[in-house]
Amino acid sequence: MFSLSTADCCGAGVYTAMARKIDKDGNLIDPINAPWKTGGAFTTPPGWWHSHVNETDEDAWVLPVQDAGLFTYQVHTFCLHTLRIFAARCVL
Image 1 (cartoon, rainbow, N blue to C red):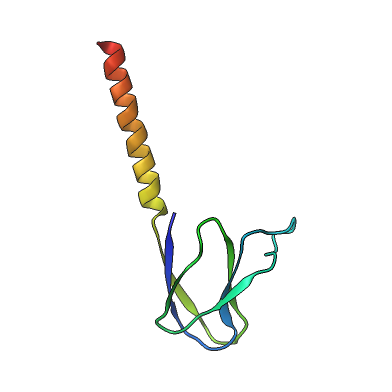
Image 2: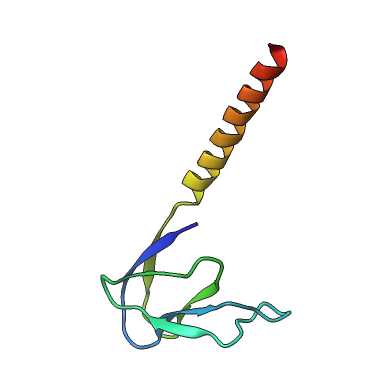
């Protein structure tokens, strides 16, 4: 699945921390920090854990656009289509 985000803020102290693994308490292991920039766009690598961090007193906004709904729809449609073909063959 894919996620693209755009940020509205920002200065030092606002970033997304990303890592391949987490520890048993859910903390990121060896995270990479990607600072936000106003009007900037970013994506987190598929399958990576991430956390959006704001260490300032200012508001920071992010607008994520994800294809999770499209992915779920495609899988659901494919399964229904496959079941219909199977059912049609069984009836014949």
